[in-house]
Amino acid sequence: MITGSADLLVGFYSLQVRHRASSNALKAAIEIYLAMAKTGRLPSTLPDYLPKDPYSGQDFEYQTTAESFVLRCRVKAIDDNKVWQYEFKVRRSDSAESQPSQ
Image (cartoon, helix red, strand yellow):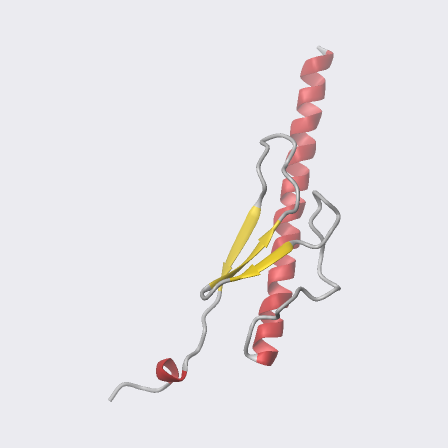
């Protein structure tokens, strides 16, 4: 009986932390998109004021690609031994894209 209750608590806690990670990643992504709107490009590093990765209490790992940016948790989740990451697409405006076809 105790084992079942402990498993239930671990499962509930893991779900709550995963939800917080998703929420924090979305909030951070919105701030990154706003920074991109102001400067025309993705920031090279994460701003200091963004929500943290709840698994580690540190900043999310941040990686940019040609078409997106990724926010990655720094440690594995305890219930599924997985590192959660969140990819956000970026629409880049090239001068050729912004000019109408002739």
